[in-house]
Amino acid sequence: QVQLVESGGGLVQAGGSLRLSCAASGSIFTINAMGWYRQAPGKQRELVATISRGGNTNYADSVKGRFTISRDNAKSTVYLQMNSLKPEDTAVYYCNALLSITVAWGQGTQVTVSS
Image 1 (cartoon, one colour):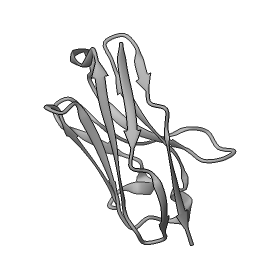
Image 2 (cartoon, one colour):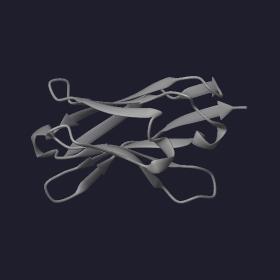
Image 3 (cartoon, one colour):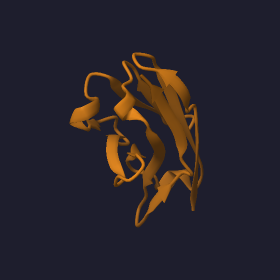
Image 4 (tube, helix red, strand yellow):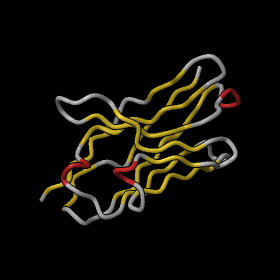
């Protein structure tokens, strides 16, 4: 099993920045890709960004050029640097790990962007 713990959420004004962290523990050798998803009130959970074990990244169009996902394999941690935040980025952000045969999720961290 893999446990994921997110941190770094909070309240920020539009145009500001936040960095989210997700620390993995447990059977981390089974982790392949990791990523961030978000869910705004009344909306479905959506992909924000993913990063493979080798460092290949993928972003939602809505965050390209503003968000950067990175991974420290030695620390079993994935980061999401969020710049130029907009009110529409307000959501609960979830860390995700794609394992050998299943998927692990963190508990989520709230990001609120005020206008």
